[in-house]
Image (cartoon, rainbow over all chains, first blue to last red):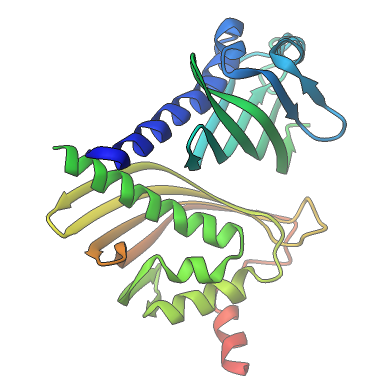
Length: 142
Length: 154
């Protein structure tokens, strides 16, 4: 890939990797990996009053909420990324399948959601500075 | 080899543009996915030309709530100014905006032929095949012919 265009495709590839890292971090319960995607002043809004400031708050919330769960998958698709210098925006679809009770293999939640993100380029790579998560459909086993 | 990756990346963006356009109900954006001589076959529902498919999609989704056409498993082969692409789709359609229990859930795939045009890659042929459809909270089976009848009335 040639010249300035190559830089944009490289930026999109790196941003895609950060988006997947969100899923890998939660789904493997690798909280250092999960924490590494957020800018220091990141604001994340998961709706219904669940808003977090900074990487530590959102990480602590994710640790607690996933603690009782079995396996989970955050299946990320449809990454639509626009890069503008050291800033980027992205909309990503997520199909989240959660086995909500590690002691009950019949208990699950299935969420169709999307994330609207603002990314900033930092010395450590692209980081999420704002996230808004919204759900379109939620199914539960019982 | 570098050009192949560029072409694959650009084709991926066209495939995603189809989903983005329908899910945002951006019908002008949807129109930009196709060549003028598009032929699309959605399991027997055949569209000749961009206007036909855009009119159908506009009518079919007009009264729906959120829709999410989730695309994965892109297989893209480029040969000069022509390419083939296959992709998997998992479409979740909230058919009534205020009813969180009324939905269509369709798993299927697209097989496409694309051509390189002065405006970038465009889809010239598309075939959609269905693997599984689940519904909830609907009155009977979805009527895929209904949007055509609505158009005919206009």
